[in-house]
Length: 303
Image 1 (spheres, rainbow, N blue to C red):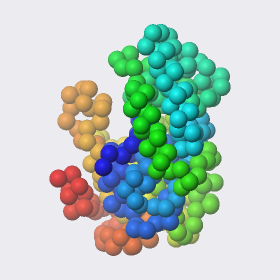
Image 2 (image 1 turned 45 degrees about the vertical axis):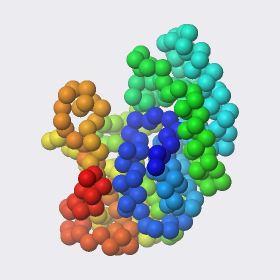
Image 3 (image 1 turned 30 degrees about the horizontal axis):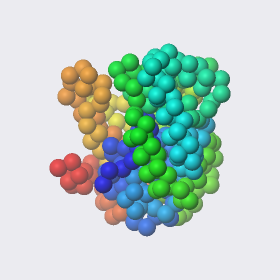
Image 4 (image 1 turned 90 degrees about the vertical axis):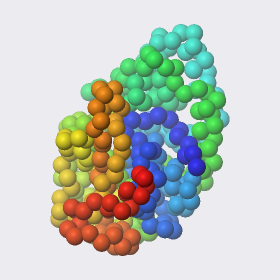
């Protein structure tokens, strides 16, 4: 089954969504994504019949507003995009820079969709002043309007009436999660973002994030976290501490676009951490919990 994608978004877990779903409990009432981005996992869950309700949150307010518009008014979003895309055929790069300047003045979420479709690698980048500063990809014009319309309508059909969308801090979202929820977190990727993540204009403090996970453990809330990883011999980010008592599985994400461009064969491997309650429910027996790769499950998916 082809899973629709509302827009291109660097760092999206779209390619890994089907694999991550293997580590979700059956019959979950609500999936919560405090760092939703393009909502790849929730969309895949809805398409494959996992989960009844979804909470999509991202502190990038225009991005969250865009997702809300896609769910509730997909035709309006598609019409706006089509008008800019057709105009771009005649004015090319100039139109992109005009749209970027206008977005930085207005924060219009519909303009953000156009920028995501046309910018390099679908990569959101903001400068220190909070202004979108990613350059256009001069090799392509972005998703064709007809294709985008089909995708937006499909996403809306999957999530309409089933999803709430917000633009708050992840701590506020976690504070409202309960026993029946499953929380999936894909915070800014360590080792790539540094102290300031250019997607959000602020970083995620490691100790603060660990404390938030400790709190979820105390409340016995099920959660999964995509956090650190490695590519070739290079590792990215600080592993989550043993004291959290998490199960860590490694997911092969294939070659990165950068490795492909450089002709390297390095395979990117991302760590997926499962809370102790979730690991127990799935009957994943590991010892020690953080050191074992779930080879039988993962290898079967990549065969």
